[in-house]
Amino acid sequence: MGYVEKLLGKNEKIIIAARQHWTTLAITFIVNLFLVIVLIGLYALAGSIASNNYDPTNPTKLKFLTDIRIVFLIALIYPVARFGWDWLRWWAEEYLVTSHRVIQTEGIVNKKTKDSSLEKVNDIVLTQSFFGRILGYGNLEIITGSDEGVNLLHRLANPVTFKTALLDQKEARGYDQTGEQVRPISPGGQAATAEEDPLKRIADLDNLHKSGALSDAEYQTAKAKLLSKL
Image (cartoon, rainbow, N blue to C red; front, side, top):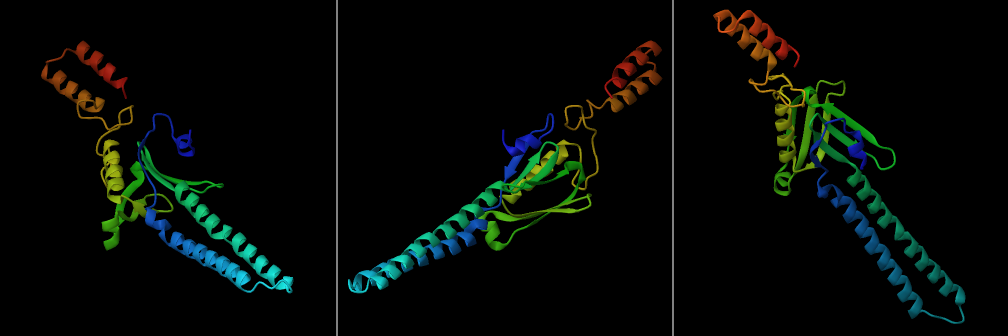
């Protein structure tokens, strides 16, 4: 079981999971690749100088060039390790919409999790640049009624799909886009339909009783059954 799955409550399930777009790693990849190429070039250059200027009468010079090559070789570890660390941080940062909330988790060793209940989501602002629309990424601001107010999902991959899934699940929970409850929630976690709503059925029973279609005993029995479902 993964870290995210351990955060889920009873009957809670993941609707959609997403990460930052791969372009988030583009800059660090280019920078570290450049460092690798430079270090390999310097390593090769030091080797060429050592072979072209080999002097058996001056072993100190040869040892110096050999030591320099070893330094360049060891230095290659830094850009490779740095990119590996950036990749792990990218992989550890995950955004999810569950049947109950929006979850943002990050961190490799020290984990940080921030979540907001779907009913607290008041607004969602999607910002996409020209290249963001072409490559499929954007910034998604989830404005809530909490103290922090905003969850910013930066450079989110497939933000339109993520936003749609969030809105669909919010509606399924019985809330509109502004956070107002439009339908009651059934015990299973989904919004109850008009036919499933016990309060509406009680009102219908009351109308039937007043019209004489139901006797007092029938009305009280049916009403008790519906009240037990609340």
